[in-house]
Length: 140
Image (cartoon, rainbow, N blue to C red; front, side):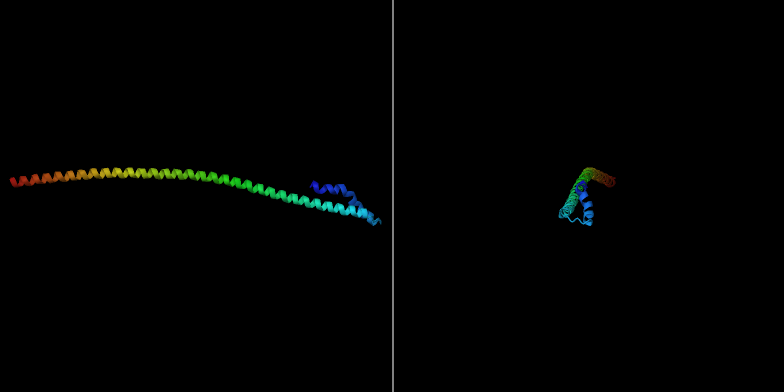
């Protein structure tokens, strides 16, 4: 704002005195030139000031967006890291479950083999007992 006010302070007396001198009948071309110069400088100063504000606003917006993108990227990285940890834990659980299932299946297989062996042994003992019983019946 200082850049906008400075030319008005420097040439303010000419701007204030110009209408009074024109009404008094003094029609100096120098005064008109000073007024035109002051108004031109004021216009240019105002335009430069507003262009500067516009540029600063653009720079500020760019910095804000860049900061927000950096923050969002950091949050997403943290979130994905946490999700990766959870997936690794889940994968470890699934692998552990698969190992446990394989161990259980092997145990069931050993139990089934042992039960089949005992069943065959019982069948053999029953067959031997039945043969002995029939021989004792026939012989006796």
